[in-house]
Length: 294
Image (cartoon, rainbow, N blue to C red; front, side, top):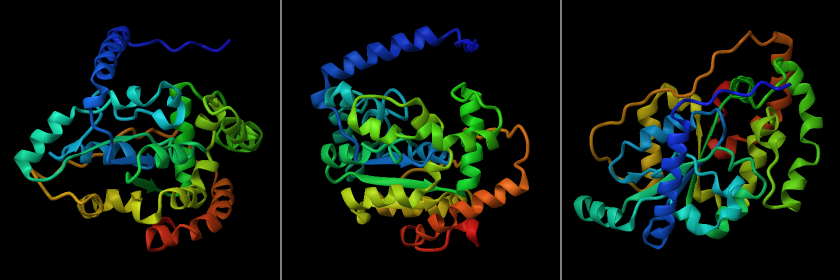
């Protein structure tokens, strides 16, 4: 029998506060902002670290409830008023614009958007003009990190990363097609067990390019972000058309997971070979060879 996770003592209180905030947000949805940009992925590539750095900017407004709304992937059936309820009031934006002389931008970060087959067309339809930010890292390390992450959260029951990778094709067989056939359905395997599939970044970026346009997509190498966060932050602000304001942001790593054991060298080589052609296709999006291929 699967062991149930113990919930924190304040879990019920947080859920109640969340429900109250959402109800209030829905009643005032028409007077709330919609995001000007989204961090759409990839999972385990530094999205939380970038989110928290950007949230320190005076003209960047984060969601009022949580960083990832996950509307365009698993909550689309809740409707646009539910989504808009998560963002700050337009009066807040107007006040900031008067103060700083520049239009503020609301945003959220949901890293499943990049991989979900319906998220991109939904974003393109509902948020015309929105800009998208994608972080990528060594897909072998991403897959290994994702397995540790899902295992720790109780969404993965296979403790062996190597075995989980071997199981992936069978687990994911037909899941993307099922999500498209039943648009409001949810696939546990597609969301939590796509260790290799999520690392084929170019496949997902081509969908963004087709539906949104490359000029509205910024792809960042997360290794470069952590090695030189100031330079990457400058690129992001330039992409968003935002000025430098306030003190420099504090850059920290978030959500790092300890690895239970080192990856077998033979498996690492095999996975690196698997991703090599996909990494080659990343060059036009990054404007250079990915850092892990140098």
